Amino acid sequence: KYSTMSSTTKNSKEKSPDLFEQPWLNKLTRTHVAFPVSIFLLSAVGLLYFASINTQLSVGTLAALFFGGTLFFTFAEYSIHRWVYHPPENASEGFVNLTYKVHGIHHDYPKDKQRIAMPPWLTVLVATILLLVFKMIMGQFSFAFLAGFFAGYGLYLLIHYMVHIFPMPKNRFRALWINHAIHHYSNEEILFGVSNPFWDYIFGTMPSKEIKQEILIKK
Picture 1 (tube, one colour):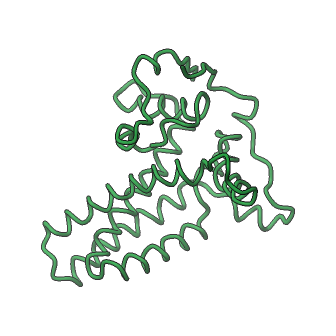
Picture 2: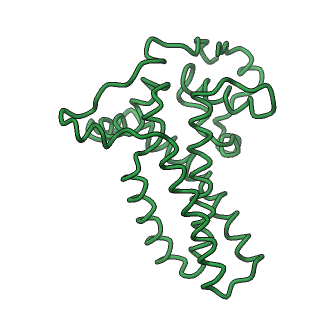
């Protein structure tokens, strides 16, 4: 049985502390979500346009690659969140410290708007590395596939920001707010999908409706 916990903690509305002694380094760890979201979504549009005029692939193939890339992102989102950002008990101290700087501090200060998404310099670095890796593996198929991946990434960042900052809606998207609140405030070992719960169902980290109803969430 999962524990019941209020969705407000003593750090829920406070700014997170600095991670480094050097002020300039700390500035590089913060950003408004609009910057990385814009970078990924604009890159997705550019890559899809590039693929449409510089490859001989059909519209159907481009569409399939795009949506395949988006689906692959959702798997990457789930996998990294579960197996990297939440290290096992036997993980090394160095790895635990690294994951805390990348993700753990967000759990301690979930309402800090400037630590919900990766900063622009890291966004550009990650996007560039992904482009090189995908191009090496997939050739001309990489551009549309990566466009879908980047679109998924941008939408994930936007959704992640919304579920932390905006009030819970009264429509079907309400489940995203509830799921992520349970992950943050009740049990960190379940509900790793932020943008969607698909892989939680596949890997068995989606609690039953009865258990979810037992968890009190006060928004």
